[in-house]
Structure formats: structure tokens, C-alpha cells
Image 1 (cartoon, rainbow, N blue to C red):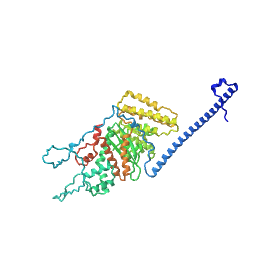
Image 2 (cartoon, one colour):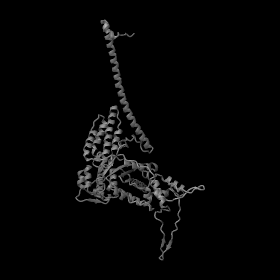
Image 3 (tube, rainbow, N blue to C red):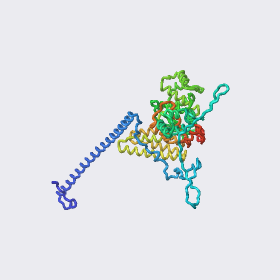
Amino acid sequence: MKKRLPSPEHADTLSLNALRGLVTGLLERAQQAEARLGKLEAETIQLREENAALRLENTRLKLENQLLRDEIARLKNLPPRPPFRSSGMEKATDTKPGDISASKKKPRGPKLDVKRVSRQEVLRVDAPVRSRFKGYRSVYVRDLVMKAELVHYRRECWVTPDGKTVLAPLPAGITAGYGVNLRRLCLMLHTQGQVTTGRLTTLLNDIGLDISKRQVVRLLTGQLDGFVAEDAAVLHAGLVSSSYVTVDDTGARHSHNPGYTTHIGGPNFSVFRTTKSKSRLNFLSLLRGSYQDYVLNDAAFDYLEERHGGSPLIDGLRNVELQRFCNQVPFMTHLAGKGVDIFDKQAIGLAAEAGLWGSIRHHGLVGDMVIVSDDAGQFRVGNHALCWVHGERLLQKLMPATAKEERWVAVVRDLVWRFYKALKAYQLNPSPQSAPAFRKRFDRIFSLRTGYGALDKLLERLHRRKNELLKVLDYPQTPLHTNASENDLRTFVTKRKISGGTMSRDGRIARDTMLGLLKTCQKLKLSFYHYLGDRLGLGGEAIPQLAGLIAAKA
């Protein structure tokens, strides 16, 4: 039976033996409590260690799970599922609706197209006798008339005195027995409506047209020389006049082989180009536009020096006068004559890049234009800027193993979000006097050392790209992200998911050309339907050349 201690309130009345027993009991209890406390502390330490181990195991399992998902997607020929959601930094730092600078919504009101009434009908009613006429009440009804039409053209045929036959020409735009309106509808539905050729054929047959899928494909991919030329002119005008471009790429299969579609877009234009490679050499060839030449000039040799080209290579190629080669064959011949090993991929690739960059500068393309990318290596040329959204995404991808590391990641992300919001405010009201303060603030954020190794390495890596991340301080019109390119490419990706890849060269060119012209018309606030009608000779609303509009808006 446990011994009960005397009450301490009456300690002054206790004897010496009783006091000794009381003190001894209290000491025993204190020792027991201390032992229990030590045991609890040991259990707490053990639980913390187990928690950290479970965090690491959970992180490892997440990575393995994502790898398995990617492998399953690869085996099913599907794109890998993105492992992370978007951070939301761009939307979270937008101007709030209650702010003064918030854009006002378009006022609601009556339709503005009532002046374009195509026909008018008077609807009558049998009114009772002695009724008084009170005029009319107007109702505007918007409708669409679509019907199949088979036109029989009887062409006059004459034979001249010298035996030659003279035949009356068909109206412009008729292709293999199909009219221009049909072709415009096919181009519109296939490009902007993302309708497949099979469904488009079914739709036309249901309306009443007798047409095959092969003929629909011909209408979509044939006789597009005018559109291809205008698309090339759009790229040239954009590279000459735009203050910046955003670039991105995505996979695109062609003729059962892997390929890549590169998007180059500015504030007023967009172009798509599908090639077999997405190297820097390929990107420079796209920036060269329609030109095919190689030029060795000061810009080319500066490019070699920046890319750590060996001095023997530079000295062997340098010449006092500008050297221009009409295409790749004489350029390679010149390199071989100068002792360059044309079978060395690294040396010949660097020399070819320099020749392309010299050609770009020689023709006045790019200039001081800022190229904004997601930090893919092939886009790091010229006056390059980095996308902040992709940079912040690297912070989101970190997988901290302890609560302390998780807190540090949250703190750093909060600092980055606040800094990004300040940069967006700077864009709206640029002030060169505040630029040094932004640079100092950038240094304070990205010079932090948290003790979390992965986070510290990432901060150090981003700090090395300071000039590219802060390009907006020198060029306020430059966007802070590549969302424009990703949005434009989303249309291409949707089309790829619906229609798959292309098989013929004409199909690949038609897809890239029409998508580029569609996006350019949208940026110039033009109707793609009216644009097609004007270019196909249907009359109606006259649409100026897109390249001229781009240059005028620069």
C-alpha cells in the first residue's frame, strides 16, 4: 500500500521525523517526475526523427510515383502528366478590382450591328374593326443562312481564224470544281474551330455538298502560296519592328517522326515553325526569317567570342571585309578551306551559329529586341530575358523534408511574390531612379542562406541570372513571363490532340501558316473570317497587309 504523506499546510506542527519523511517523499516524487520527463523528451526526439524519416520516404515515393506515371504515359504515347500545379503568382499579383488602376469593364448596352440590316420584313396582324394603327415595333433577329449550291457555268468557246481555241475563264478562286466560299468555310472551321477533316467532310455532306475527305484536305493544304508569303512577311515585320518577342516550343510529330514546333510572338504577331530539331542552330535559322545566307562580320565574331570560340577558329575565319555566302554549301566549303573540321559537330555548329547570327544582324533583324524565354538553352541568344513564372516554379518544385525547410521555402516564395508584384507596378509607372533599389532588393532576397541545401543552390543559381531576370528595369515594355507564347501554343496543342500529327509537307506548312495568321489577326483585332474572304477574293471588308499593320503599330 502506497504511503500517504502528511499535509504540508501543517508542517510547523510536525515532529522532526515527520518532516524528514515529508522531504524524502517529495524528493522521491520529484525524481519520478524528472524520470518521466526525461522519458517523454526521449520519446519526442524519437518521434521527430521518425517524422523526418517519413517525410523523406514520402518525398521519395512521390518522385517514384511521378516517374511511374511518366513511364505509363510514354508507353501509351501520351504526354507526361505535369507533376505540379501552376503557382498562381501571376494572378495573385494582378491589380485588384477595387484599385484605381484596374481596367474598367466594357459597358453593356444595345447591339451595335443594327446598321448592317440585310433585309427588312413587315409582319402584319388581323386587328379587330375600329382599331387604331400605332406604328411598328422593331425586333432585330440575327440568323445564319447555310445551304449547298451547285452552279452550272456554261463557258463560251470560240475558235479564232488561225485555229486557236478561246475559252471563257472561270471566276477567280474556283479549285477543282469547288467555290471560294466553301474553301473559306473549310479554312475557318479547321483552323479556328479545330474541326477535323473527317468531321468537316461529314458536316458538308449533311448540308448537301457531295465532297470527299481527300478533296477537303486539298482545299485546306493546296494553293496557299499567298498565305505562306504573308506569314513570312509577318515574321520579318515582327523581327524588325517589335521591341520584344516571347518564345516557346512543343513537340509535334510529322510523318511518324518526332519534331518540334517553335512559337515566336510579339505584341502584334505570332508565327509557328515546325522542324526536326529545337537546337540553338535551329532557333537562329528561324530568326533569320526567309533569308538563306551566312555572313561572317563583326557580329558573327563577337558571337564566337561570347560563346568561348577558340582563338585559332576566330583568327582563321576573321577577315577585314565582310564575307557573305548565299547558302550553306559555299559556307561549308569556305570553312573547310580555312582548316575547320566540318565533321566536328561542336566546331562546325558554333561556326554555323555565328554565320547565322551575322546574317541576322546583316539584314537588320532582331536589333535590340528582347527575347523572353523559359530558360531553355536554345533561346539564350541576343538580348535575353528570363520568365519569372518559370523561375518561381523551381521554388515550388522543391520537396522539403523537415518543417524548418518547409517554412524557409514559404518565406522565400512570399518574398519573391512581393518582389514580382513590385516589378509589375514598376512596369505601369517606370522610374529609372528606383531601378538601383530594385537591384539591391533582388540581391537581399537571392543572397539568403537558409541551411536548406537545395533551396540555397537554387537561390544562388537564380542570382547568377540577375541581369536576365531584371531586364524589365531597362526595358519596361518587356513582359515578365512567357504566358503569351504558352497561350498561343495551347491552340496548337489542342489541334495536335484532336487531329494528331501531319503527314505531308503541304499539311505541315498549312497548319503552321494558318495558325500563325489566325493568332496574328486576333492580336491585331481583325476578323479571321473577313481576312480569309478578302485574301480569297470574295470582296467585302478590305483587310490591309498584316505586315504593314504590324510595322504601323510598332
